[in-house]
Length: 379
Figure 1 (tube, rainbow, N blue to C red):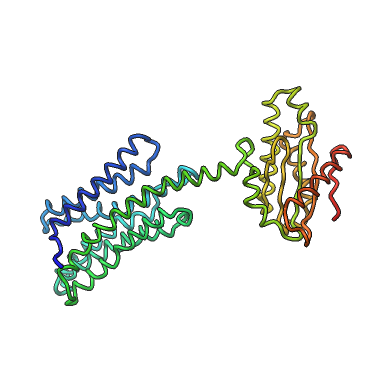
Figure 2 (cartoon, one colour):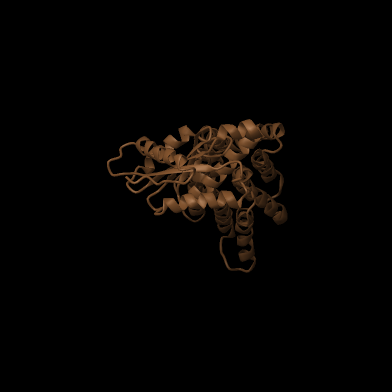
């Protein structure tokens, strides 16, 4: 098999990176808040500049080559920076992290160290050490960036991000073979020297297509999450409740039914805006307390809410008291409204959570009959 020469492979990598850089750049121009596209466009276009610079800068120019290797390392860090910028747009995290200096500086050190050791007379065959040092520095840069992209925080939620990281890690065998080829007479040594550019022909496409998939996946996750949440209160809706209810179908778990007393009269007397404020206050406090216990709060519709508490919450009655206290402390439980609650525990013979909800509703109606005092159901 005959392999293309270096110039042909470099041209192919240049065209591929230019195309992806253009795509990312256009996507960023359409939405300037999408900084991840700017990072990814910069990575692709800087790589094009590096490929050109390697042909333009003389091999004996240490300052110019050091700058080229620094920029090459930066092209490895920028895909991670873009992924973190995309995550940070949701959770407020920073895109640039201190560790990212390592992928940038690593290739510079790998390139400069053999020359420094040769000047001190500490190594023989400096040309071999130079090839090994260049490959080792790039392997460090690519490997660290790929590991964070594929296995760092948030990667488990994104197949695109994990695939992009694995594509970067797939460059490492080529770098390791290059290091070994600098000292050993490996078969196909000419091919080993071309491995980095040969890898580009497959892995550049995989890497950039995987990056393009990350924002799409994130939008899909947000849409799925929105479909399971009540938009007014942020609690689970009925569809969301079905997703999580079965994990609470364990003896000792608890279900608390909650609703606002005379909610219709609140809307009639004070307006729907006030009624919405009541629901938001109740949903906010119920969700916060339930999450603290490892449980969930759901809005079934209108003024009807449900709280699911795990077996680990050993005092659901205290939970109801705490919810009332929090509503009163937040001034949400104003004089013109109050809540009623009913409690039911999951029994050993319960096969559906709906059966427990029915008992919690029955307890709720008993509480309403007693003018808002919760009456836990004894099962």
